Amino acid sequence: MRKIIIPFLMGFVLILCCFSLSSCTSTKNETEIQGKTENVKRYINPNESPWGLINYSKNSEIQKNVVQWSDGGLKNEGVLVEKWSKEFSRSGEDSGSWTFSTTPNNIVVSSSCYIKNTNKPFEGLLDPKTGGIIEDTEGLHTGPTDGEYVFGDSYRHNPVASICWRLKDRKEMWDKCCNYMGKAFVICNGALLHCGARGDISRLDVSTGNPLWTLEPNSDVLSMGSWHLSGSSDRYVFIQAKLVDDTWRLYRIDPKDGQTKEIVSVSGNIADITVIADRIYCLANDNRIISIDENNLLEINSKQIAPELASNGELSRTLEKVDKKIAVRIWSWDDKVSVFYLFDPGNFDYAELDASKYRIVNECLFYATDEFIKLIDPESLKIKCYIDCKNLVYPFPIHVDKNGILVLSKDKLTLFGPK
Image 1 (cartoon, rainbow, N blue to C red):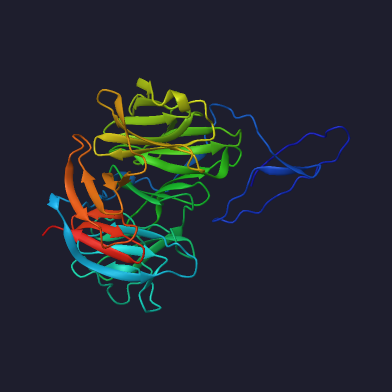
Image 2 (tube, one colour; image 1 turned 90 degrees about the vertical axis):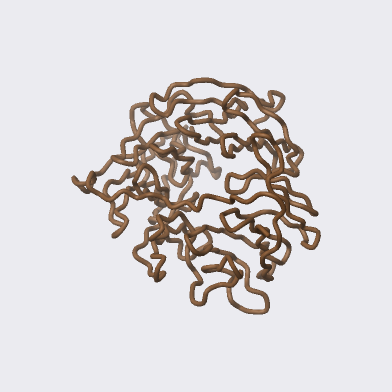
């Protein structure tokens, strides 16, 4: 699917290797040269888009708007108590992976672990009152919901497919080839968008799964398998994509009609982004946080944090929204560097917090130790909720919703809620 032209070098004949891509696989942009694998960088026309827009429906304006259902979050404060605790076992050396999403009446759980003393996977529809898994609900995909359907991501599932299933009877309505780089579905501005495995992005009809428009990847521009959904506001979706010239670019997509626009001021220099209201906050590779107006795409403000780490290109950097604040984490994979900052977009000031204790779950700020877990107000840093974890081994919070806080420990999943 790639068209790569390589000149003859010094009389050596170079072999062009073509890789066959299925709709759910990725390749590396590489070619063999004298026994060595070298990255091939290509010139990109700045006006050439990584996608081509295809409209399938002229009546997209009459499509029913999709509104994401929200449980409103945890409202209680003070000491939370154990509501139930369920034991689980792991498969061999598997450390266990978990994903959760909340629906109006249940919690959808997907896990690589098993219910204790059974061969049943610890997954399906979980009753938040008892912790029990409803019979014959294994294999359900977690994801956003409009209250009627769940748009389930493919994470941990084989075959890797994104599935829309109906809440009332758990019937699978339709499926799509998955996005193996991250979450597949996003609901934005009344539209349901699906990110496919090839780099394709589509607005879908909820009832049928048929595309209303599709952004088809341009293989001469987009590096296959190297892109991901970075965030969304009330109006737009934002995608980071790696192009064949080996640069990362940031694009704004209008979910209504599929129109794309590159955010030129920060493209090529972004580690991560998050979105609050109508502002895009970008963490650059030199540790600058840059705010951009999502409408005119112009830079508003910027500030560098941790300047002493700015020149270290080996570090990983992430941004996470925490209510109206932003958590900034900078770390190395060997754990020699690990810092955590809470950034205030209002005044562009920031404070350093203990990176070994603070973590973000469902846009909530937690302070966690082996003995207790505290839910922290990001504005005041005061304690909102307190959990005594002395009876649990290696506890940490893993999911927060209206029912309480799910805590995962060595061999238990425990819900803590109001007294």
